[in-house]
Image 1 (spheres, one colour):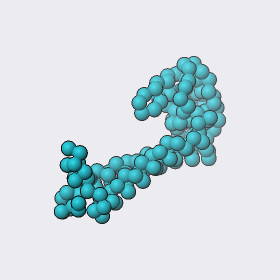
Image 2 (cartoon, rainbow, N blue to C red):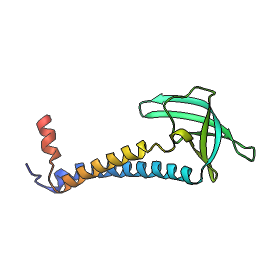
Image 3 (tube, rainbow, N blue to C red):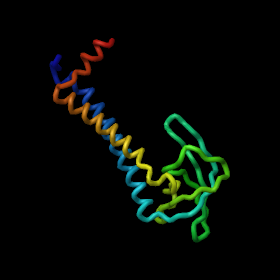
Image 4 (spheres, rainbow, N blue to C red):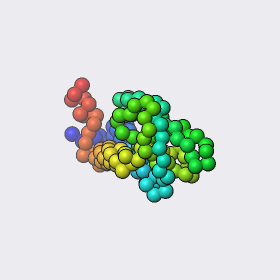
Length: 145
């Protein structure tokens, strides 16, 4: 069944485009952060202050000392799944932005950019298929009630 008008395919196309663009942004941000830390990051050790597991992933706060003596507390951009409070871990931080810090052991894990990029590709493909009237989401929704 084909769409009868632009009005029927507009909501699905716009929704998929917005979600796809969001995932593109996530993939670019995660990949850029990893690239910055790999290129100019400074290695040091940090102490784990807090570690929480959530549905969306993990959240880990660490504290480390800069060469000039300032103490930085920041959330890890990339981390492993399991830490214990007070554990000392190897990290890499951006000297221009010390709040950008990642566990050095997880730095080359490109899972987040890959997953976000895959989701972006699926959403943008869905938007294209909707735009060109290959998929009729309205008819599918009606069929499944």
